[in-house]
Length: 253
Image: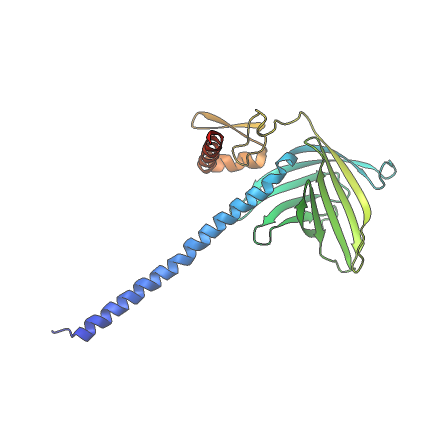
């Protein structure tokens, strides 16, 4: 049976179209994977700004500044959390009057921080905001009554942090104070990254917990980083090697 030149050309065109279609289908998946990885790295880098918060804190809350009337004591802990689809820092409060828990994340596209909170009564409230010097300022959307809430997290130093709760009504420009919690770091001061102390292999913060892999010891800063390292240590070790090499090259210049 003879095959005409037109048939050969037709078969070649169909094959080319199938090849292009297969390639086109593969590209978005690869592109999506690369974008997701880039977003994760950007989120981790943005949240690393708050490595100084990781650990336990003792807090004293005050309705009115310098007044013990209505004051209370609470405890808090900041811990890194790594999930397959997201990265964040968990903020867990014990005996808190304004918050029960929260999760701080980051939106790389909008370049804004997100704080998803659980209130003492179990209700939830979400905040968005940006970092201004040492203060993270986050604002909620108006609720059903038109109330807008603001949380400001101000890091004074490695031992002291202030969390201010404020509120305003929709249409107003000024906030009025609800309360402020002054936190003091619990326990011994953690080693600071770059000060000669151990560095967290996962986030680059201050390492305080020892972990091991293939006979070699490393440090992490919290239980969240410990879990992430133990589940898949090699990517963190490789990343740390690359960072160390980059620092070495920078010093030699």
